[in-house]
Length: 290
Length: 235
Image (tube, rainbow over all chains, first blue to last red; front, side, top):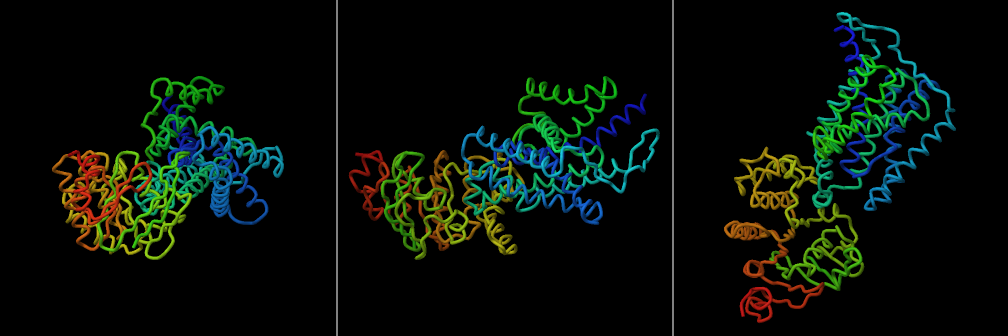
């Protein structure tokens, strides 16, 4: 009994930290640019495809490919911001939302043309090995996902709280004009935020792609998970996104384990609905990066 | 030092500045007075690059600066202490001062200047790790001033530094601005409190609906009948 529970929690935590990774980017982009980035899921998906391609066409090792994929998708994030967000800054939020939705559809369909519709699997060097802790079985792959995600989350939190650029990001989020008067290049911060969010989503894409495989349209799934997390944690709140990811991951796995695997995704939607009904500002309050 | 020639700026569709010309010489305190909506803040926002003028020219130290981004204007030595203070509620006092020095590369110089700010504003030292949102109005204004000085500006522009402050604190602000001037900075001061501004300034401009209607030595304007009636509340 206890073992089943712990097993579900362990599975939930490893998935949850990856949700956090995708959601941090979404919440940062919202907090700083005021834009809901529908293409966040595609950055996740492309992270997986980049790693997959690098492993297929080069003989780089998995970890190098993963890092390179993050950089490539971060660069794509900058380009995406420049083409689809930058020209529309200052316009109505719906216009920006439609623009990123268009970007999302474009990226997913382009991926389908380039790589085909079939699922691809990222070969991880850790596949197959397991670790058993008092009845709870965890694969090495999941441990790697956990370690890698937690390390990234800690680094990101520290970056936002401690560095000059991180402080500038928080300042722009709250009052971009005051930030501009300090000599902070607000547009540069916007582009950087997109790169940052895209890179984190790409890391998530590699990590989960190695576990579940990837398809061109998996981004939809990713962005919905990230939305659930961001709504739960409070729009724009990075700490909220971190804890929100964990809560969603655990809740889904408990739902799958104790109700039915068919209800796994329903748990996420139920959480969105409940939070919006009873605590629309999110469990951790809104709009305050770190 | 600063020459503004015939600038026109729009605020959305409204022409907020209908051809403003003014000049600030080195080591002067210049006041810009006028009622709400006269275009005082828009003038400062245009100088600091937040708004690009539709027409006219701005020169600073013999260089055209209209059309430059705010970053370049800060780098050239103009600092703008904005209306309503614009303190970031969730950033600490220290973080505000660090961002004030965002473009400076000399970390030790920045440290020294921060210490200097804490000497001038001891209350900020006490609250250095406190969030901006927890400060009182007067403390926030001191922080806004300190932050504006961290870029080592040659010209400091203050927008309504007395706004919403208790009379005693207003007096303190006046002394602070005087002190900044004495240490070598040039000051462009926008104020609704014309009495305060004219007592601080050497020269002043009076703005009405986007145009300069009067200019001259501050003392002369204090005696001017129109200024007395419209801005000083005495007949």
